[in-house]
Image (cartoon, rainbow, N blue to C red):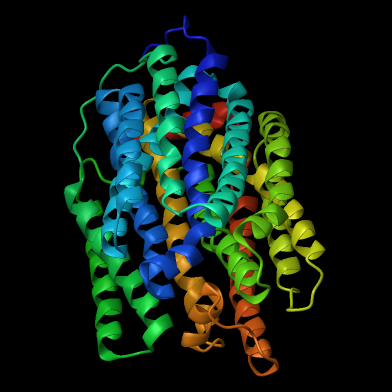
Amino acid sequence: MTKDRTVRPNLALAVIVIGVLITAVDSTIVVLALPTMMRSLHAGLSTVVWIVMAYLLVITLLATQVGRLGDMFGRVRMYELGFVVFVAGSVWCGLSDGWVVLVLARVVQGIGGALVSANSGAVIADVFPAETRGRAYGYNSIGWNLGAILGILLGGFITTYFSWRWIFFINVPIGGIALGLALYSLKEHLTPKPHHLDVGGLVTLGMGLASILLAMTRLSSAGWDRGDAALLVLGVVFLAGFAWVESRQSDPLLHLGLFRIKVVTSSLLASFFQGLGGFAVLFLIMMYLQGARGLSPLSASLLLVPGYLVGGVVGPFAGRLSDRVGSVLPATLGLGLQATAVLVYAQLGTRTSLALVIVASIINGIGSGGFFPSNNAAVMKGAPAGQYGIASGMLRTFSNVGMVMSFAAAILMASTRIPRGLAFAIFVGTTHLTPATEATFVSGLHLALYLSIGMLVLAGLSSLVRGTGRPRSGQAAGDKAIGS
């Protein structure tokens, strides 16, 4: 691989940050609009969450494959194609007239999101040398936090005063601007390398995850039956088949050689448990604020903005710190703060001061600002130079598997305490809590949040044992493990 040093790194970074921003907008704006969508589409809670999970599942399955396409045909080309597909999917989402069509449109949107997210980290690795990538990923976190803030504010404003369909249409001008800037400023660095797509791994992993997720969401809405048991067994069988297929692939979906690098393995596990523990928290807090406390989407969203603002400020400093001292300290401390924030959320009741939500969001923002750039830098520093696309895709795969499982696990855990019909009715605002139902609702919410804390603790332990993750040693280890 050769690097074209005529490319202006700061301009290239700005383009990548915009790309991260647009995907971040979509991650928070849809969660805020779920209650409105449920009323408009006449969909149940266990059904409407597939609007979120289908998007995440597609990104999960395609993360390593589109990263591989970037290694084969050009990371910049795949990155730019991602915007085209993402915008097309957004238009279809906005025009959908039923939840089934909307889920299918979200699949298309997820393909575009995968192309953007899986190749963005590799483009940064192409442009920036190892010793300054932490700073670059830190600024990348600004894009994520700004996008999350925009998603929250736009989601709250649009769903309060306009149709929920505009949460998708808003992606069209943003995506068009990002595509234009990418075409103008990004240059291809890649010497193409031959790869093969892992179709067998893609199918077996997709069927395994989809079966398990479907069983979990069915359990949360209808209770246990033989069909759910069959789905769970089928999911386990497919995942076992996935492991068998991967062990015999010359170019697998998950590159097993990378797991021989301690810092990469620990960082991927930290990313998985962080996604599993952290992603559904926003959904749970929205359920609490809009359902139990009766706030409008806009009022609820404003309570969470301070945390994302703080996270955007902390990110670059954490990235620079990881360049100097390694990733263990900032990433592990960040995860500890995120667990603390969820613990604060778990103290919420129906009469608790809403100032507690702001406090928890700020703590969580500091934690996420410390974890993400440091963990991303650790993976890319540990990966060999020729495998940046695969490493970046694997990082997104592990994170997204955790995120997509997070939704199903949170709903399932809450449903063990909250009557199934009550959760739906409260969330869409067709009923309100009474003294008789208040205790069970709060208990279910807290149980789901305590599950999140447990997963974040596991993420912290994984981060703690990753090692120093210095660029030189990580590079040597990666070359030895992959054999490049």
